[in-house]
Length: 94
Image (cartoon, rainbow, N blue to C red; front, side, top):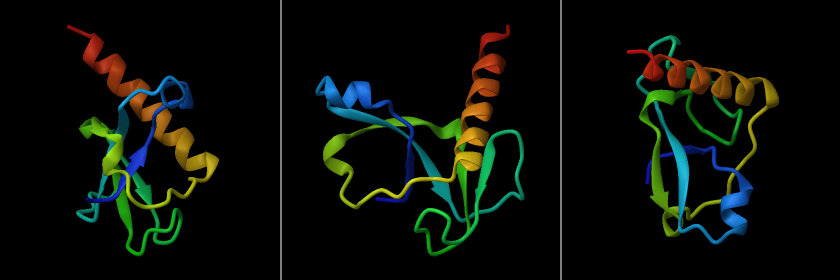
């Protein structure tokens, strides 16, 4: 499985929900934009520089989460949350 950023609330875990909401990460760097967040090498245990693809969110079966998770710095997580909000606003416009 490719690296992902888990963004699901613990409330769903506590409820026994069988899937987890994630954002995939890529090494195909764009240099940042409205829908990407930079993850410098080593920031969350990643060996290479990556970008979180905010527009590619999906749910995966909890059984696919096989490796330990490392926390993101608040600044980076805040940027992810802000871009998710922006994406939601863009999708809400007609």
